[in-house]
Image (cartoon, rainbow, N blue to C red):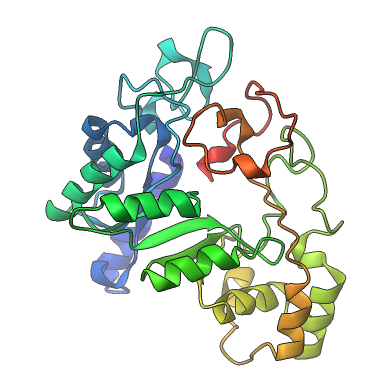
Length: 315
C-alpha cells in the first residue's frame, strides 16, 4: 500500500464517517504483515504504522503476508516510508538485496514464532482477528497446532477457475477458517503478464480467465458478465474472495451476483478448467525453507535475481 493510497483512504474514511454514510464498525479493514517483519519484536511496529497511516485505532483482520521471511534481513522493522522497491540492504527498503543482488533471507525466522506475536495483537485490541496468506496446507496445520489462544480466522491464497485449491478449501472449512481468494478473476492486469516471471505469458489454457470461451458462453447464457460468472463460482465454492477495480461501473457490476446461480452443467464446465495454473510464484524468494510453493516450481529452476515484477509478492 503506497503512501498516496493511504492518504486517499484516510480522506475517504474521514468524509464518510463525518457524513454518517458509514460507521467504522460497519467496515471490514484488512492489512498484512510484511515479510521483512516476521521477527516477533517487529510484528507490532508493522501494524502500528498501518494504524498510524490509516488513522485508525484497530483493524478487523491482520494477516501474515507470506510464510517465508524473504526479502528480509531480520535485523530491522522495514516500513513503507523506507521504500517499496528492491535495494541494497543498507538502504533499509522493504525489499532488501544482498551484495550479489539476490533477496536477503532471514533463515533464523519461523512463522510459528511470528504467530505468537500476532496473537498478542488481538489481546491488545489492535486487530479483531489474525490470519494467513500464501500458506500451504502443511503450514496452516502447523500454525493451528502451535496456536495458543487464537487460531487463523482466514487464509488468503490465489484461486480462480484455473486454480481451484479444492483440498485447501475443504481443509479450511473443516477447521472454521475462511478461505479468501485473491486474484479471484485471474489478474489479467498482473505486471509480469508479459515478462519478468517464470509464469509470464498466457495461462496454460491459452486464455485469460475472463476471456475463456466457455466462461464467455456461460455469461451469455445467464445474461451476465464473465466477471459475474467467476464471482458467482467462488460463492458457490463456499469461499470468500477479494477483487479490485478502479472503474466505478465495474465495481457496481461485480455486486450483481445474487440474482442468479450457476447450474450443475456450468459448474462441471468450470471444473474442467482446474489446470493448476498459479501466476504468483515469486520464485525469487524460494531459497527459504518456508517457501510454500516448491511443488509448483520447474524441476530445474535456478534462483534468480529480482527483475521486472520483483515486488510481485506485495500481492
